[in-house]
View 1 (cartoon, rainbow over the protein chains, first blue to last red):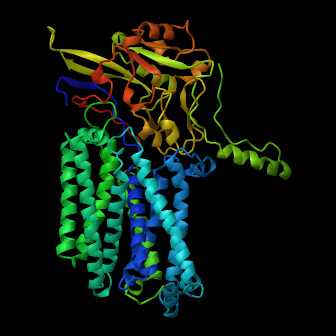
View 2 (view 1 turned 180 degrees about the vertical axis):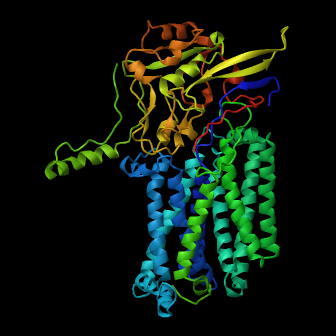
View 3 (view 1 turned 135 degrees about the vertical axis):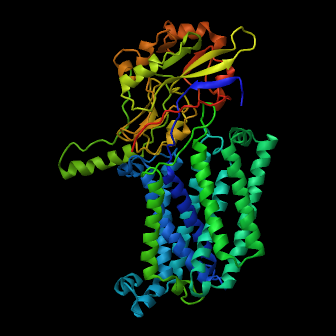
Length: 365
Length: 250
C-alpha cells in the first residue's frame, strides 16, 4: 500500500455472484467428486468398493439434483433461464455449461437408476416405506450391466465437461487476478474430489455399526492423497506468486497478501488441509472427523475464492467489505439450499436406506 | 448515424401453421447466430470520450446528471469521480486532491461481450457497448469480466447495467448527460472517425499525453485521458476509503 495516497471518495461495488453461486460450485463439485468415487465399485467392480461406491452414487445424486437450483437462484432473472438455450453463445463458457449440466445429470440419473434398481425392488418386496413407488421405479429390478456402463460413461463425459467448465469459466476472468490462475480448475477439482470422499465417509459413518472399517480406511487413504495434492498445488501457486515467474500469480498474491482477513484464510485453509491429511494418514478410522473436514475445506475454498475474490476492487484502493445479508441473497440462500439437500436426502434414503445400499456386496449392480 | 438492432428471434407474423413451420429455420438460424463483438472501424461513427483530468474539479455533477438521466438506483453508479488525497513532497501544502472520472470504457476488445452466455451484451457498430435488457438473464458474468468495475446489477431491473454513453441521447443527436453537465469541460465526447471534430483534434494535439486505464489488459478502451497519473492507471495502491455507501435492497 502506498501511504501517500488516501482514497477519499469512491464507489463500492457489491458482490454480484452471491452465496448461491458458492453453493452451486460446492454442490456440483461434491456431485462429480462423489460420482468418481462411485466408479471403482460399480463400474470397475473393485473388491471392497461396492458399498462405498453405492453410497457415493447416492451422494452424487443428492448433490447433483440440488446444485442446479442454487445456480438458477443465482441468476437475477431466474425466469429467463431458457435464454441459455434460445441464445447459445459459443464464446461463453457459461453458455456451454448450460448444455453440459443436463448431459451430466441425464447420465447421472440414468446411472443411479440402473445401479439402484435391484435395491429398489428389494425395498418394495420387503414392504418398506413408499414400497409402491419403489416397485414402480425399480421397473422389474433387473440388473443391466451394459446399460449401467453406458450410462456411467455418459455421466463421465458430463462430469468431465462440468469439472472443466466450472473451472475454466472462473479462470478466464482476467479482471480478477485471483481467479485468473491456471491452477484454479485443478484446485476446484482436487477439493471437489476430497469433498466427494468426505460426504461418502459421512454416509458410511451413519450405517449401523458405524460402517465398514475397511471401507473407511480405504477412503481415508484416498482422501489423504487428495490433501497431499491440494497442498502441492497450493505450494506451486505460492511459489509462482513469490518468485514472480508467473505475473498473474504474483499479481494475485500482491492483491491479497496485505489483507489480515486473507492471511487468516490462508493459514486456516493450510491448517485444515494438513490436519485432514495427518488424521486421514495416521488415524484412518476417524471417518466422521476427516469427512467433515474435507467438506469444510471444499466449501471454504469456494467461499474464499468467490466472495473474498469479489471483495478485491478492480480499480479502487483497499478492499470492499462484505457482510452476509440474512435474506434470500445471503444466509437464506445457504439455508434454503441445505434444506433442499436434506429434503432430497430424506426422500431418496426412504426409498434407498443407507444400510441397504451401503453394505458391501449386499446389492450388486 | 448507423443504427444497430440487437439480434433477436424473428416473430412468426402469420397465425397459420404453414407460416409458422416455414419460420422455424429462420428462428433456429437467428438463435444459433452468436453476436460476435462488432468493431466500429467500418462504421460511419466511432464514438469515444476524452477526459481531461486537469480540468476535473470533482464536483460530481456528472455523477448526478447520469443518475437523473438514466434512473440509476440508489447506491449504484454508471459514472462517478474517484477522489484521492495525495501527499505532496515538493510543495508548501501537505497534500493535493486528485480526481479521476470513471465510466465504462467502451473497449474495442470488450471482455464483457464474449463471456455473456446469451449474447445480451454487444458492441454496436458505432462503438458503444450496450446491454440488451430484454435478453439479459442477470448472471453477472459481465460484471466479473469488466476490468474497470464499470458494470453492476441494477436491483430495480435485476439486469446488468453500465454506462451507455447515453446512447439514447447520442442517437437523437445530443451529448451524453455527463458531458453536457460537466462544469469544467473535462469530458469531451465525439467521433473518432471525424478528423475535424473536437475529439479527434484534441486527441491528435495531445498525442503523447493521451493515456487509457489498464492498457496492459489489451481491452483497447475508447475512453481516453489527458493528465492521467500512472499511479492511478490501474488498481490504485493506497488506503481504501473508509465510508462505503450501501444500497438497501431486498
